Image 1 (cartoon, one colour):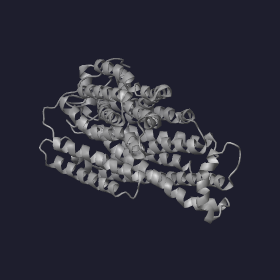
Image 2 (cartoon, rainbow, N blue to C red; image 1 turned 90 degrees about the vertical axis):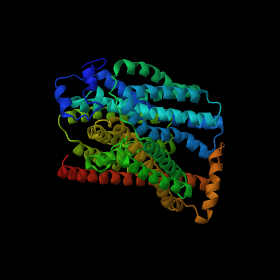
Image 3 (tube, helix red, strand yellow; image 1 turned 45 degrees about the vertical axis):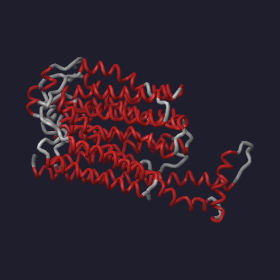
Image 4 (spheres, one colour; image 1 turned 45 degrees about the horizontal axis):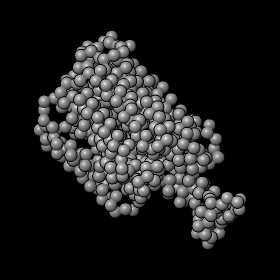
Length: 529
């Protein structure tokens, strides 16, 4: 395999602006060509920065809140502002890459990440820290979008499926290494944890300029109004979803969601009416593209549910430390890496994305079903089937879904279309996680009164029992408060009930999504290309 910078022919083999990976011309021109492994691994490592940054933000959130005395609402905003900025910036920066070259945008985005991370490290107050996190998010939106779009530039044509498998297989291990380094530095000082991205970004900045080719630039003008509309739509809609997760009845949350949807409609109208669109909205009518969007939303939710909800389950009910949770989730990284490589090879040998994606969702559903018997006393091995099945299913979804986004991008729109993958994925992730929080609460509230009665607590004393929990938790002399102990035990049972409800609902969602993708694939085959 080639180790080193791709040749000019390889760099431009996908077309003028990174044309679809499925281009028959590119495949024929590169018959017998070898995969530029180092360049693909570099792009996967760049893409992993997004996941690593989210982990570091989560690890340091408590210490940041204590340092800046953040209220609960400000803490939630500080936790989400980076993700909001990332989702809003990905498509505009991807479109910019189509116009001026993706390596230039990648370099610019890495510099933005450097600036944001360094500012977060030295932030004197909450406002500066939140601005720093937003800056970092903007940069990461460009980094991830360009890192994905450039896979077709370094490995065009028939090389793309295998390259996508390697690219996806690299993301999680790279993110895990950075996360572990950030965890170690956070034990010393939370500010040091934010130096992990600069430590990674600097060498990647130079490596990218040495190993990655510049893509051809388009001379056409863009559509600034449409880019502003889609960025605003993402920010407003996801802000509403975030508010909804904390307060389902908040009028402001529903107003933001409605305003976000209206801005989405405005974006589509602006793009359709423009003589110089930045995104081909006609793709939103193509069955295979719709199938890929559905698959992307669901695999993002599946990964988030598995890692976040299992982490919560183990921490709250089993008393796992953060290190134990990290080690417990290691199978997800290992399995995802191995199965991503397998999915890439299958695609290279002719497997169809329209069948791999529903297969992957069905496997995810099977993994979620294995979690239904979980209790607060379940051993770690009881969770192992889900830790194998869900990442396997995710790999069988994400690798072919990546290929569909590349293959469906018209010439000149590769950056915009491939970057929209993260936009749609983040939408699905945010809605799914917010729904899972609501379902946990619903399931817990349904079971909590019954569990209290089963524990022998008189309904009249339920309020007193809840008030006694603080006393129960604070006791150091071994004295017991029976009513409070019953509340604690009932809480564990109620949380388990909510956890099971979430797994059941999203297993069903994966199966429904799989069926929808099969139907859309059939419709697409009848319509033809």
